[in-house]
Length: 395
Image 1 (cartoon, rainbow, N blue to C red):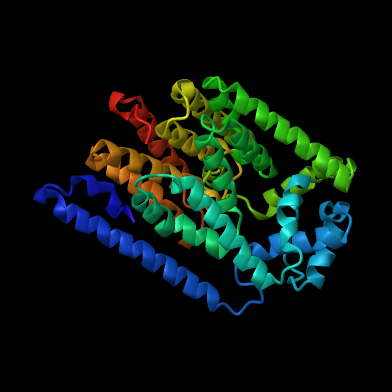
Image 2 (cartoon, one colour; image 1 turned 180 degrees about the vertical axis):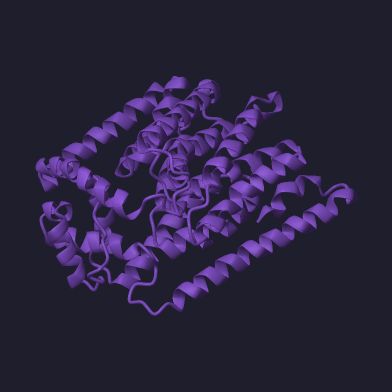
């Protein structure tokens, strides 16, 4: 996949071995995808694609039961078992009522049809947001298609493509089409922990129209969900969060699939209060980086900074949320190719670490504290890249 990183250098024979090396890595990325998918399809399980049963069951239950059923653990569990879930499993509904609105189109479909539609549509949106209107789309297309995060999100059957599409699309359209951008960012409130730094960037850029459209969209979603599901649905969600957090803390402590500072510190044995405080410090540093880089508006390099900073700032993320990170890689690589500037060896190492660490974490048997290190290094690279004068170019 990273073969494209040095395509700008192919004019000189001396770098052709490097191009071939990263071409080999691109092939390895494709093999990883094929192998991971093959293993998944061979699982002896009724619902082999990870978490998609949970998403599909929310739609099924939400369409046939009061929404309060989704926020009542006993009622939800019984309904999911009736749909075929192993009684030993737990799949609570952690999303606000807007999350159900996102999933309800899956309700009329069987599990298999819903899975195909979900992955096809959300990946298409993700691809369109990442490279859909570029003049040179081949480079970001290869990165997005062959990244380990793509394979992980497909096999998990999760919502990482949709979240990335909304955030990346909203940020890239913020200047040109602020109304549409605001709608996309407003829709991201179905998973609010991934939109925490978007307001920082928009305010730093003084993009008040996009801010206004985002706020209007959030308000409209609140009114619509309250009208359709009842205003008590929001209270049910808020009241359910404590129980969800308790279950999460009990079953997912230092989860191997969580690439966050908080998870790394938990694995190292830090007391919860200290771990949370340090996570807060990193979140503040990430917000400062976004503020500094967005003062000149939503350039592609600034968008990359915000995407990486989001992954670093949030305490609650999984490897299937990291298509955001892959989009940042694609933006930075495309910018360097447009400028005909090569990456230095150390920069290539950081980029490669950002690309492959999700695959390492997904394949490990226990948590590896790679996420925090990779995100800090990648954010440092992206900020440095943005503040280089030649980086002030809109791709």
